[in-house]
Structure formats: structure tokens, C-alpha cells
Image 1 (cartoon, rainbow, N blue to C red):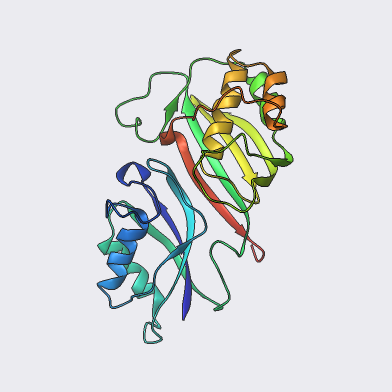
Image 2: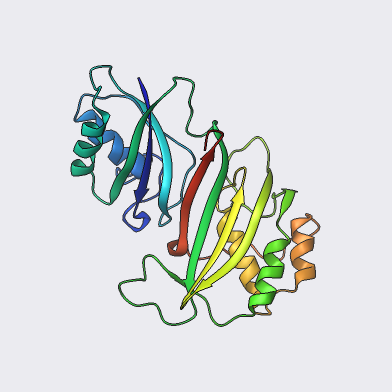
Length: 243
């Protein structure tokens, strides 16, 4: 029986979402350890991967469980007692054809930062950038909307059959002393969001002109490959056809 779970996790406590041969402190490995302690030997499949230090407020995973686990609410509660820095927000039965990654239609990332010193209690969850021009930031974000080849906006070394992605929304919001950047797309490449955030912030701080940003988006020339700090990034939502 296949189940879909929506999870959140504190990325500062893990070396990323995906399994690694050099550490057990990944989100995937810790969930699978908890499942195996309940005699559930299914691997988990995520809607996408997050790098070291990146958080999730609504990541989606799927895994298969024996039919005798008919009380999935009980399963959710037991797993949450076993897991640390990971919370299963909801769990539901789905068709066997459901796939957390391939069934997903859209993904939303949220980036949070301040222009004031970040407190010791926030440093793992909020990033810092100096003062910037908000109108220039919004103008830079709009440049990414649409279908583009993001070959110049991802970390090299990751395998993918195409670097073309479509971004449906890209915008900036402010709430009090916190600043938010949102990207919604059909998918993202490795480190793409962090690279786009930093490029837009450079435009907003007059370190990069918007003409050069557009040239990099259109693959004419690379001007920056810097990444925004990981602690401000959250995988915020996964959208499926039924949502």
C-alpha cells in the first residue's frame, strides 16, 4: 500500500535530503531508519532534493507499507516520536501509480532574509543581505518568468536530461523586518534557486546590471555563479494535479 506524506524538516541539522555514502545524517536516511524499526523496508522517494542547510516546510515523500498498517494516523504519530528535526505533517493513502517526484506539477521555494543583524536564534534559518533597492529586485525577478534554459544557473556536476525549466511566478514581499523571495516553477535544477536569488540581490545592490542578468539568462555570458546562503531557503510547497 502506497502512502504520501507531507513533511517539514530543519535543514541545518542534516547534510541534505538525499542519501549519502559518507553520513547517515540525511533526511532520507533518518526516515528510513525510523521505518525499518517498524519493519517497513520501503525506500522513500522525495518530490525533490534539498542541499545541506536547506529547509522544507512542505516536502512530499512517498513510500510503501504492509497492508496491516491500516491505521496510518497511528503510523504518523509513532514516526514523529522517533524522528528528530523532522515532522510528518500529514500522511494519506494514494494510488500505487502516485510518484512524489514525477507526479508533481509545480514546486514553490521561499527565501527569507533580513537587512539587519541576524540573532543567534535566527542564524540557521534566516539569511542576511545589506540594504537594497526593492524595485530593482522585483524587476530582476521578473526576468526569470517564462521557459528558459538554465544551464548558466545551476551547480555543475548534477545529472539531468534537460536544463530547461519554466518559472510561473517570481516575486518579492516584505513583512516587518523580514524579506521574502518566492519562485514557483515546474522544477528546479541543483542550486538554481540560490543562484537566482543571489543574482537578483546583486542587481538590487547595484553590483550587477539588469542587462548582464538578462544576458546570463539567455546564455550569452556568465557573470555570476555565487549562491545565496543556504539557511534562508525553504522548499515551501509541492503542487499536484489534484491540489
